[in-house]
Figure: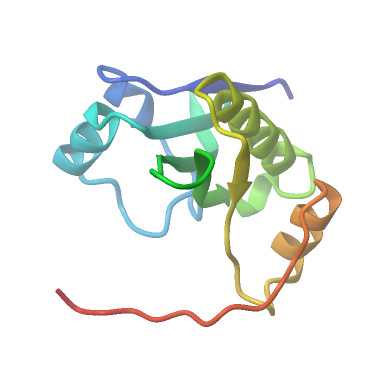
Length: 139
């Protein structure tokens, strides 16, 4: 197996034609995908096993007037058939590199405390965990 990690850009929508289950939370909506890829500061990496998407990492560049530019990693997903093979590690490390290229000095993300696989991955990558409150609002 040779997994390829690729940076997605506007016009790469056809790369999403074959996606393994569990890579994304919901089915890809073509118009949302197009808008995401066109949005400056929105980054997406895909992991491919041949033509099949088996992993993804999505992030956003946060620029602040009073703080360092940050990379917020919004999503990391890997097909259950391809877990424990280092794909998520490669995706996150590649996203860190892309963020550094774009001027980010820090990265952050969140996951549920009971998501043991994700917490293990982020600790392995050198992340320092902490607790936080999470709130959602309907708009």
